[in-house]
Image (cartoon, rainbow, N blue to C red; front, side, top):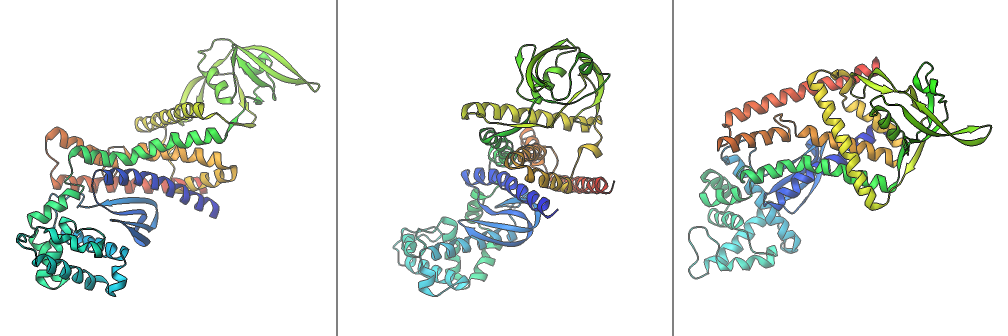
Length: 465
């Protein structure tokens, strides 16, 4: 059980990193400040700050998030939000000063170091002839290069000037947050997510699910190049009273061709039988007779019978009454073919997923049979780990697709919910009212809580049932 839990946690961690990296990379590319990249939810266990971002590990597993600058649903930045922004600017200055070695040389830290930087900045700019009085940056801002390794950014310069005027870092930040000057708010908005154009916000939110969906074929390509365990078309059982037995098929027969079409896997064989619309099939097979391998030709007439599909519902299907032996062979493809087959196979998996969701929604597939939670995922992960890399990778392909598609569902709190808000905004020409967005978020949280409770209870019922 420990192996299953660890395997599930690692798989989820990788897929969450992929998902959040999609948001992160597009946000950074578009100039949005990313405050935190977290694997797991709060409380924060540990992390490291690099650049403008805190890369953290949270205590609550099976999730993660990218926190960008700006309140998610607020119309205007509050004083508290501006205060948090100014605290981030302080950290930027301290990090830059640490990188140049100035902090160590000066023996200062925290607010004392920030105050010293402000004094240096204020003292030099005060000597500049014609220094602007409105809080703008003078040409002597370059004097901070020995301390920061760069000139201060406009928002940093505004903060340093205020600190220089007030003499105390805390007081200066409080006054700046309370005043919310247009210069500071403009700098905030340049890097805040909510103030970006509709197209940019749409791209940033869509990037997470897109990363998971694109990761699936890339991983599938690697699996196909390394070697994909594939069930071979060897018969395990042949049901008496069914067309296969009547035609002469027996356990151990290996199907090599159907109607002259070569068959390399059980999946190919099954697909040809089911899609033949009941037409007689000419099977070519290899059979061992008294230790001698012989080629045998058999004609079989499929029978239409109602069976339980992979979606859990009943459907009429053409069958001949045989099952696979369970034997597998490693299917290894050259790079170019692996690329093509990787996208084709991933497309098939995606189609199966979409059909499955549709059948759950329309009630054709019982939700109790189709949905699983963290317990079931851990069980499957533990099983796949014992099978080897290819099986684990295939499981990750499936889960990555599911994460990407499910996150696109138009449910508030999911990425699809945000995309729905953006769509409304595009149609209306303005965002939904703050109150309406807050209500939608509360409804989304309620629905997700119910869903999580359902799948966990469903997992428990499977264990005890």
